[in-house]
Length: 384
Image (cartoon, rainbow, N blue to C red; front, top):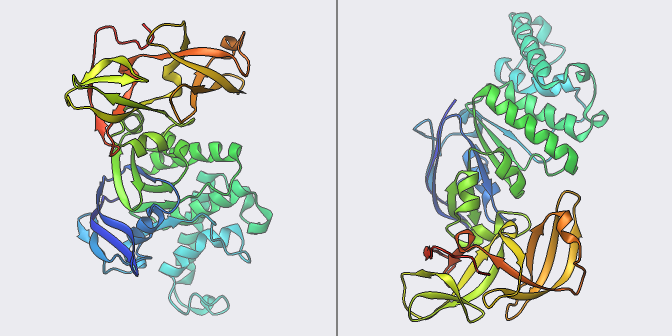
């Protein structure tokens, strides 16, 4: 197993910067997920780690060893691709065995009709056979070893791709959006299988996805990328509860976090729709800020001077939960309130309501989208 360190990695294609002098340390045995919107550079970064792309600047250290000049085969990393990359004409058994044959067979032993004549082939073949069968048993592929990829489901193909990576005994595994081709139900199942596999192998996993649910449920740590920059690295809990950038707050969480436009007055007091909210910031200058509140932290309340009046525009029923889509006064963005289905009684599209939240559940960001820390008052409920 191995740690991976990225030192000032930069990548440009012509005049276009894709990655901007990025640094990141991945611990031995850690499951780290690179997450971000399409085009943020996460897949390019993974390919740089694998050796499939050469960075414009910087270095990749694998177990402390500078590896940027090493070929992909010399880095001993296993990569699982989005498209599975299976050989359609080979059986499941042969697809899994290919990496070991390429590594352990001589050039002559790789020729099917010649290998029998080469001394030592039987012993090597036996070792390969034992390893392929052991990995297949671990992944539940034993009954499928004689099938071709065209006879397999998406989940089975994904397990074959995993098996082909495992037999190489790599120092780390790299995953490039491996579940994006699967349906929603199978993605959930495969997430748990990959998590179990990582725990069994105790190996380093670097996983790329744009699916925040995968990132939140599978990772030890998440690295959020935006436009080639590494914005924030932390545990799933820390990324969700304490985003340091408004872009991170908006990207992580479903439904998306609610963002309200507000102002601070000359006393550092935060005002929402010209109504003071019961917390203040250290900066005592009048400026525009953003208040971000998760849908589960908003609630419908009784009318009061501090409550936010609004009108229900859409109701989304999800079975065990429901969402109210509400237009509120003096705000350009529609907000979303998460409620229990039992709380829907009496509400319909067009209903006038009042919205409140506890100031301790609110996140404040400045005009540049950077986190501001406020001091809530002892009774800091907006609708009090």
